[in-house]
Image (tube, rainbow, N blue to C red; front, side, top):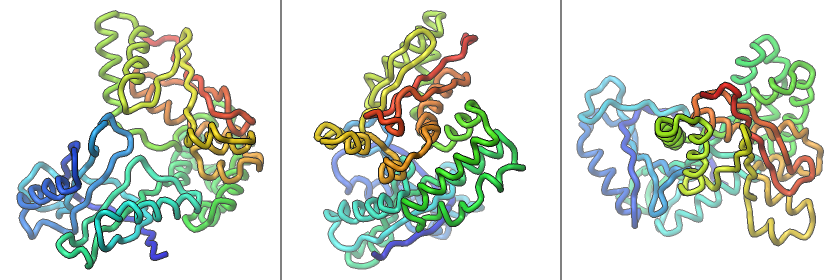
Length: 352
């Protein structure tokens, strides 16, 4: 497969908005953005980021951008530096209607390698005026789990033990390592982590490795919490308002259930149809799990602590919402033989 692996970064002028109806609207908005930028300031082809986690129900929630020189007066608002991205990509040529097939091939390739994406994917429009020419580059944006793990170890335990804990990561966690080798490296790393970290430390480290939840979505939760608390003066009632909002807004599948100062959140299966149709416990657990490393090696005894990574999704939401640290326990896990994962988010006693 003509797949490319690369690391890219750019200084783009960007706009963000929801697009309804057709892809032609994306091209129109990009044309307007480009028209407002001096040609000498543009350093590369335009792109579109499709955001997966969104409250938008109709159309696409997108970020459109054009790379520009950082020292230029590009005629629009101050350019925003996009973060460095590690990508797997493939160029689509021919009919736009078949672009979905190219995207499916890229995502399928990543899944077979046990690589997960961040919560968006990107298209780069190399030359839209010639459909049979350079085409559209479909980019799977890699969630760099090992880099986040390295940063988390430095933060929680310090750099002195990092090299020992991360030994072999270059080979074991490289893009081409494959699912089995990636699984074995993570399992061995967790065994080493057991020697130097207690339960709270392991939670703190692994939860920092989770997908990055979109900041604009977290800001909505924080606004709901602030408004509800200002009206009632009761932080727990404000937490309930956040849960109600999450249950109603399409940006979240569900908001959990609060009992006293603990919120219980049960993850819906990754593949609900396969989960319901499963004829064995193993099939049901595989259909529930979102992690391709675990899903492919479900019966090979990955430590349950690995699910603290999944708890980081909730940690970002709730710490962002209330502005206080939370702790999270694993209540149920597919790694324990359960048919799905459930977490308990513990709110601080002094939440005010």
